[in-house]
Length: 354
Image: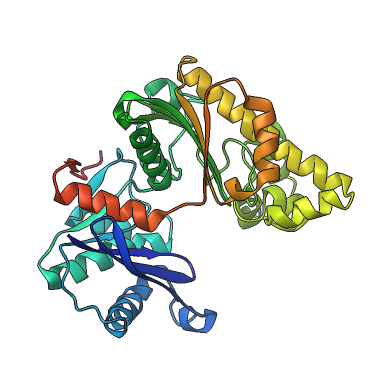
């Protein structure tokens, strides 16, 4: 099965071609600030990105002949995880999403290329995957419910790989998956469903390299009404300019570790506080699984940082077996989802949110 994978990001579009599990070719097509500044909205970049994908494929010697095209799932309405055949409802909700993001173009571009190939177009495990149990949604304010936005694609992919490596099925295991990236999501995977997870985008859970995480509520309200900051300022403090960046002016954990080793005590306190908060969140998910955790998986870019990983482990060793899967492979995860749908191993879901 030949599969085309499309993953639009804010400043680039990743493209890859797979034959079954084997990656034949990949390219990260970068878009300059000047190129993107021509477009008022992300949706307006649609034709520009699609034409670049086709041009790049032709330059690499690939004709538009595929068994499936799969795009990164965007900011749809909350839905359960799995593989989805792109339909008109998916495209409508992405084009009219309340949040602009390049990932919203993945399904739309995939569908248009797939029509030219006479093959199906898919998305899989979008970031809005929502399988939380009812108890996990309730807060102390009836007007506000907890919502699920997390690294669903990579979290589920590493879970399946781990299960296969021990001769088990993902649907039979209880796992905690901590995705450690620019944003951090920590989820409780119970028998194939993510029954609890922090909102890694909008201020929930541990703080991360660029996000504030959970903040004492009264103090945040006071800050909002202090007159010092606009609505947009506060949003940036929560997502983009929060976390390590707010304290230390960088999101690069490697450079922070270097500062620590040179004797910077403030850097030491901030980085160790982040690790402590990550560990506390992992512990809370152990409770969500009723202390029946088969394994804790740490993944994402920061899982490459031995210093950070070692500090987190110092707090959680003994809870459950710990597995480190550094980095992320969204392209491979998308390809495996498409292949599973094609060969019938993964059941196709229907996108029909409430």
